[in-house]
Amino acid sequence: MNIKQMVGEKAAEYVEDGMIVGLGTGSTAYYLVEALGKRVKEGLKIKGVTTSSRTKEQAESLNIPLVDLNDVEKIDLTIDGSDEISADYQGIKGGGGALLFEKLVANASEKVIWIVDDSKMVIRLGAFPLPVEIVSFGYKQLFRLFESKGLKPVLRLDDSKEIYVTDGGHYIVDLHLNTIENPIELAAWLDGLTGVIEHGLFLNMVHTVIVGHEDSVEILDVR
Figure 1 (spheres, rainbow, N blue to C red):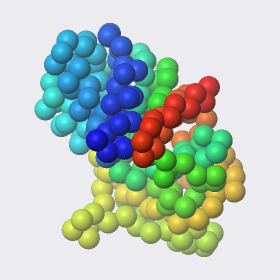
Figure 2: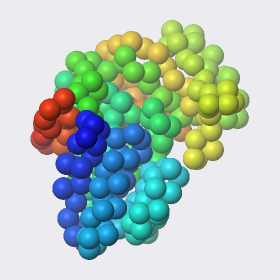
Figure 3: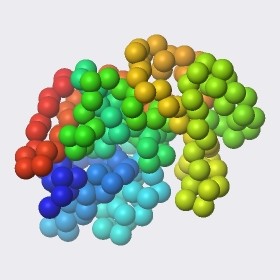
């Protein structure tokens, strides 16, 4: 069993009968959804809210009942991966392109669990490029602004070398920052830019982090 599978299956143990569960996106969340599919087959009664078309297709293939985010007042628990987690438990997400839907689902959740392997645990955020989801109209204006600020923007492309388009119909610019000295300040600046839909800074959001090591799983209760 690989590390991602270990933490995905461990996280599935936190899901209880009757819960509405946010289902994350990415290579680690994949194993969570697989584990929940097995539990549903064995009789677990849950409803899932998915964060991407990929996760939706996977959950449907496993007969996990799904509901739309519009149709729930709150989500009991969301479990998702993370691309980086700092020493003070701030996160960068969006490497898989689902940051907008992931943040919408997380913000509607009573509790958030992140599942990662130990390579994702860092002192400070920034080595992983920060995804910024932007509108396609006039996107080069924002791109030039990021360039002028020295943020080293790169427009994300898909496997066919075409511009990557999110499930929401937007583009993603990845900012290559190396180190983010003040994530809260950067998040506030990005939030104030016209044309920025969302960014990958997930701040003061996670309650529990499940970290996979080579031969063990570590549970970190953040708040």
